[in-house]
Length: 350
Image 1 (cartoon, rainbow, N blue to C red):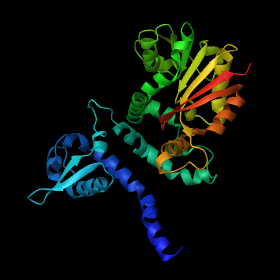
Image 2: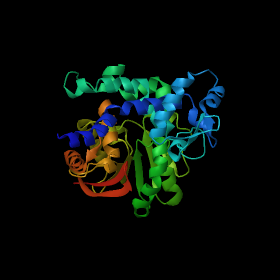
Image 3: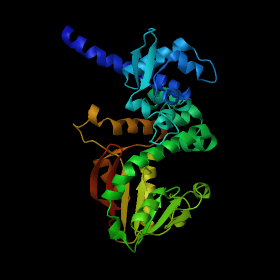
Image 4: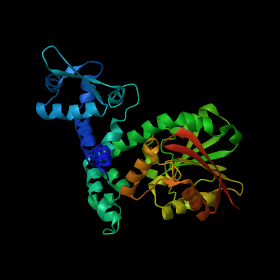
């Protein structure tokens, strides 16, 4: 590199190398409840500290918050006294908890909590082939799903974050899928949990017969199903436990599994569909070669997260290969203008 090229490239390299500092400062202020304490006001660190149940290190808190000013989480200004006062930017407002608008605080907790941080530390060994299980499993002694079943402090923020994502994605999912054409037919949401997605479908398209299918323990804790939705429980890896339907819908399920296990899930789906059955998948599709950029990085970051736990996001070619392995063909892959969700329509090859 020439001196000019090095000078131009160095800031970006340093930003990459220190990105963890921003995320850990963010995790720290969320654990302390700082965004909620600030709310619609502007507060100094002293005022924030006085509102906390325990006394924080004020200098350390100040330094964390100024890092987050540079990341666009807080605004800062000087009072006449010379003290710095902080406010929330729109990004910071999304980090409040227990407020009317959606919150991504739960996502930050999931991404940066200690068990996940321990998994990141094992990524080099996993990539190098030195360990034979996903980084999260190695670092924490069990797969992510099993770990979250044991520890509510990890499970609850994760599921809250999934609900937050659904809130932003569902209007487009409802609009982009031709639910009206399914009138009089049965739609099974595999991994449908509490039936929230199909509850919205049933509300707008009451002629569609809706079944939300999930593990017995999930259904047992789901409460009463939404109007127009029936619950069914079983194991998506065992087709004999799955309800039959004309259409199967899955949202953010297959990215939790590697290709072999994902193909097994699709094979179970194929076994309970009729010859002309359809499978509709709502998941991310990685950009094609040449389109990876700062503007398209969100699905790549989610793919990196899945790398920790043994899952993966997929490109169009990977979706086609996965469908073919399970006896399906890809009818359509539709970009919905949402970085985390596209519509992938499959049909039974029989």
